[in-house]
Each structure stands twice: as structure tokens, then as C-alpha cells.
Length: 391
Length: 155
Image 1 (cartoon, rainbow over the protein chains, first blue to last red):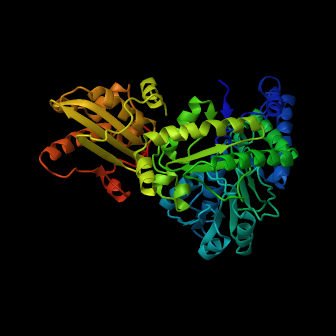
Image 2 (cartoon, each protein chain N blue to C red; image 1 turned 90 degrees about the vertical axis):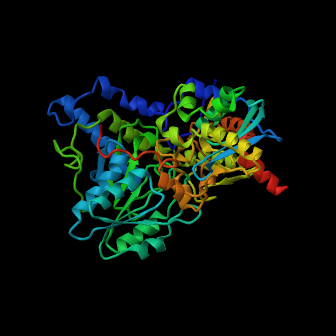
């Protein structure tokens, strides 16, 4: 059976050109960048070249890029690293209620360590208002962290405006742009960003590599101590092939940006339009200010995990916004923050495309989905009640 | 998280889906807020379950447990049927993921309630519902929406 992969916000395939760029660093140029001999120095040159590529993709300088092992580590470094380094100045952090767990759980950890955290509410589209950010600032605020693009519903946050507010108040601004790179234009200077997290495996580089941009002059301290790699900010021997892959993926993401975004947007719009023709379904997230690759819809009366598993049997790989398939059975914190009732939030389905998806795949999804939804609704006690009430 | 082949079999091809319009007993349990709601309908003849059907809103585990309990209980005496426990259902399915044991493994409760409501009906009493709404109640019993807290220390 042919597989249609529509879970690119979970992870992406490594693209052939990224893989080609990485391969020599496994078996030929496998040196340690800290070694003085020529193979070590070749590896060092490759890491520095990748640093340039990553920096260029977001408008930063190469010296401002710290390679990490994943997006979560980048988020932890940004939040914990600045919170502790600036503790004398203040102990208050502002974030949003729709952040990725890499931010939310990290902020909760800091609360246990005595910091105060404000979790800003969002509107029904999951958007943070810059006014609410400004209103939450206290003299103790040292950091504001708001994601660039929401991983579940795709809503694009007004990071430039939030960054401006942070800059005006001399507060650091971090953005988790793991879902933003390659999807929306990002320029750390114009967008007033002090720190930005990104992850390789969301942009066709492998898992196990990420990066944190840290603006020159930012007070931040390391979480991982050791041999002093990455200017002492992330000790440990560099994941050279991964870093090379991340660099290449960033270069490609920017090189093909316009074409990819146009393609993803076309597929996204086609899918949204088709799905919304079904009964008792709604689009989650902002109708237009959303990631070009994100479709998140809620089907009433049925549960997301069941939808995902039935789609999987039909060869379509998607995910549920409700976290019932993970260890936490609660409805999605993002959808709840948008004001959705939990029973509705349980019926959400996320389908995230990439530049490698084809229009015929969307056609197949639109042919398959109604059958899956109808089958589950026929089993659901809620559906009958609701349709009886209607008629 | 992985489901056993038996769970997937019952989920993809559920047995006895539907309603019994003139059911002798109906057991409705769950909480839509938690994402699981289950109704079991029974028809009783000579103290035995002559027919049993279900309707379920929920995840694969919820659907599979509903399906398998209908196959387990059909033809049983009421006394035997109400002895079927959550663990019996999970065992029959070849196990359930731990986080699904509390929340989605409601079929035994639904069947017990259907039998209870059948007996209440015989006595002229109104049926009892096993449906809860809202999250507070569940926060108290600590069972339904939230699985056990993650341990602070690795074991």
C-alpha cells in the first residue's frame, strides 16, 4: 500500500540533497572538530560552514549560532540559561499558554525553582496579542518567549510586534521557531529576536540536531558543561554529520522558500476546502494567518485517535491534536486555550504537508476521509443524539 | 504506544455495533470531556444475555473493549456477565497500554450498569446513568482524564 505522509510537523524525511551532504562525514571525514590534525580541521571547517548556512537562513551572524541536540534543548538553553543568568535583574518570565511542552514544562520547572511565569491567554485562533504581552510586563520581567508558529494549529504569532515590545522594555525575546523555519520569513534583526530555536528534523535534516541563535551580548549561561564546545554554551563533541545536514537543510529551505511555500499553501487550501465540505467539522487555528503546511480540523462526535488509526489503515499518516495517542490523555492544551470544549477538542485531526507531497495525495485523502468519519459517527452515541436534536 | 493485534482487530472490525430499540437494560458510562463515552444495550431472556450491542465515542481502546465485551458476554447469565471485570476485558484483548487502562476501559462498567438498570426496571425504578460531565469530578478520583503522574525520579 502506498503511504501518504501528512505528519510533517511531527518530523520530516531527510531530503536526498541533505543526505548527500552528510554522508562523507560518517565514514570519510569523521574527524573530531577539536582535533588539530587535518581530518579534525576538515570537520571543523564543515561545522563552521553549516553555522554560516543556519545564520544566513534567519539573518543572524554565524557567531550567534549554537548547535544543540534538538529543538527542545535549544528551548531549554534559552529559557533556563537566561532565567538563571539574569536572576539578579528579575525573576519573571512571560510566555503563552499554547507553547510547545519544551517551553511549558521548562517554565514549570523554573516555577519550582522560584521564578514567576505568566502564561498569556490566546484568542479563538490561538493568537497571542502584543497588547497582552505588554500588559504582563513587570519590573522583574527578564524574558518573553512566544513561538513563531504553533505546532498543532499552525497559527502564526505576531513575533515582530512582540519582539518590538520586548526590545522597548529591554527584555530578552525568545521565539521557538521550530515550526517556522522554511514556512514563514524570519529575520532576527527585523523581527527583534534575541534568541531563536530551530530543529533539523522539521526541515528535512535528521533528528538529533538543532540550534539556538543567541544575539551577541545576551546574558545566558550553559546547561551542559564539559569540553567547551560551541563557545562553552553546549559542551560535547559536535554531531558533525547532523550539523552539516542542518546547515544544508537551512540553505535549501531559503533557496526554495517561495516555491515550497506556494506548493504547500496550495495543498493546504485544497485540503481545508475539501474537508470543510463535510458536516459538523470546523477548522482550528487562524483561517489565513497560519503555516502554509498546516491543516487542523475538529470533527464533532468522534475521537481523534480513532480517526488517525483508520486513516493509517488506508495508508494516510496524520496525527491528532488531542494527545490521546500519547501518554497524556487530556485534550490538547492548545485547543482548550482557544476556548474549545474538551469533547470537541478530542475530535481533532492534524495533517501537515511538505514540499514533497503531491496534489493527487490530497485527492486521495479527500476521497478516504468521509468514509472514516461516517464509520466512526455510526458508532458514536453522541452523533445520534445530536442529529436527533437537530431534526 | 502500541496496541495488541487483538485490539486492532476489534477496532477495525468491531462486533455488535448498534442499538437495541426495545432494550431491557441500557448502561451509559464515561465522560465526553475525557473523550470516552460508551453505551451498552442488553436484551435478557431466561436470565441470560440474549442480545448485546454497543455505541462508543472514543479511542481505539474504547471501541475495542466495547466490541470484545459484547462477544464475551453474549449468552452468559446475568450473574456471570456482571462478574466480567476491566482486567478480564484487557486480558482478553491481549493487554492494553497502561494509560488506557483507566480512561478507555469502560466496557465492563457499562455492562454492569446495563444489568443493574435492567434489574431496576423490573422493580419499577428509574435507570441510573454512569455519565459524568466536567473535569472536577475526575480530578478527585484521579482516574479518568489524567494518567498517573510521571515519577520525579527515574526508576
